[in-house]
Amino acid sequence: QSYNYFITTITVVLFVTYPVMIRRILTIFSCHDLGEGKSYLRADYSIVCWEGDHQTWAFSFGLPAIIMWGLGIPTVGLCALLKNRHNLQDLDTRIRYGFLYNGYRSASFYWELIIVYRKFIIAALAVSLSHWDSHIQAMIATGFIIFSIFVHQDQQPFTRREFNRLETLAMFVPGITIYFGIFFNTGTLTSSWRL
Image (cartoon, rainbow, N blue to C red; front, side):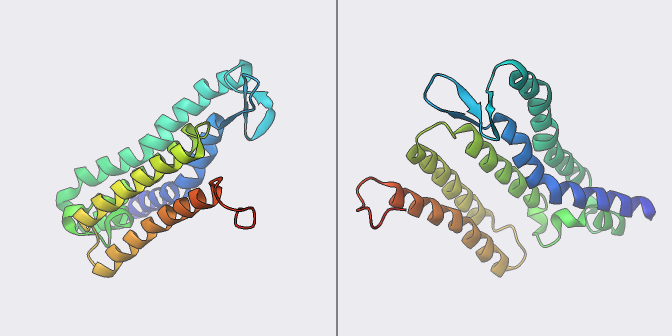
């Protein structure tokens, strides 16, 4: 029984800290081009990106951390659920992994991990596209959000209809935020309307 609670604790801690860790890991790759042919780390503008220590850290720590933490944690969770998919109602399985599938339809027991992957993709897009024009970033992000909404609407993964509606609305919020961000960022607004 204590082993079950140990697995539960590890699972909860890993999935609760996941978004924060991903944001921290991705800061290693978040660079800003200041127009002089070099880009600088956004966290510390004294560090030139992709040269010297930064390159060493990016490839020796950043890339393995993204693979192990960013992709590895949700993949291990998915494998654990797939391995136990026929035993999801067993007490031991519910104690260990119920945190990941309670509230979802039995056909969508893996959906929490889809949400985790979606968060990872959004964070990775934010960092990898940071040097592109803001309108292109907004279009790509909006496209991904629309795709996510369509997939969610098609699958309806939650057991309760209200939760499906809430999740859909929660995905609309960043889309609306991005839309108004583009609107207020255009050069056609008078100065009194611009932020």
